Length: 215
Image (cartoon, rainbow, N blue to C red; front, top):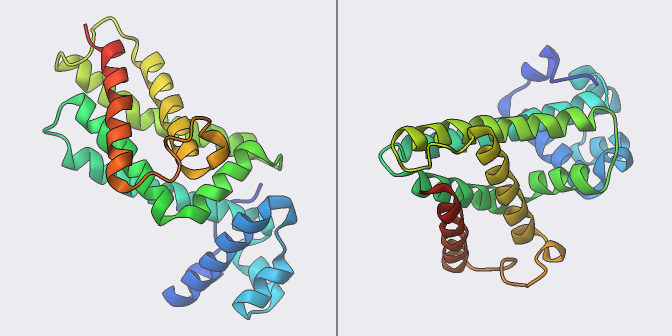
C-alpha cells in the first residue's frame, strides 16, 4: 500500500491541507475503506479528481496519510501525559493515560470510528500491518511505564513487562470501545457516562490493575 503525502500536497497552504484532510476523514469514517469514494470526496472539497492522485497517488495513499496523522495525534497527546506525570506513581500515570484515550475519542470521534471499522468491519490491503502498528505503538508506550514502576518498587518485581503491557493494552482498548459504542458496553455502565462518572470508572479499573500488579 502506498504511504504518505507527496510533495505536491505538502506544498499546499495549511488551510487547503486541513480541508482535504478533514473531508477525507469524514469520507472514510462514514463509508470505510472499500466504499469510500474519491468522486464524492473531491465534490465535497471542490477540487479536481486528479488532484487527489497528484497529492497521494491513490486512495490507499490517502488512507495511509490519515492513519499516520492519527498516530501522530495520539503520540503527541500521550507524550505530554508521560511528561506531565513523571512525578506520579505508576497507577496514576496509567489512569491519566486511559483518560487521555477517552479525550481522544471525544475530540476525534471520526478518527476513532475509522479505527473501529478497521478492527471489526473491513478487510483491505495492509489492514493487518496497520493494526499491528497500533498495537506496537501502544506497547511501546506502556512498557517503559511498567519498567519504571518496577524500578520504583510500585509493581511486583516478578511481573513480565511484556505480559503486563499486553494486558493493559487489552484493557485500554476494550474500555475505550465500550465508551464509544453501546454494543460493546454489555452492562450499560460505561457508554455515555459523563466526565466525572467516567473518571470514577477508570479509577475502578486501575484499582483492579493495582491488585494484580502489586505485591
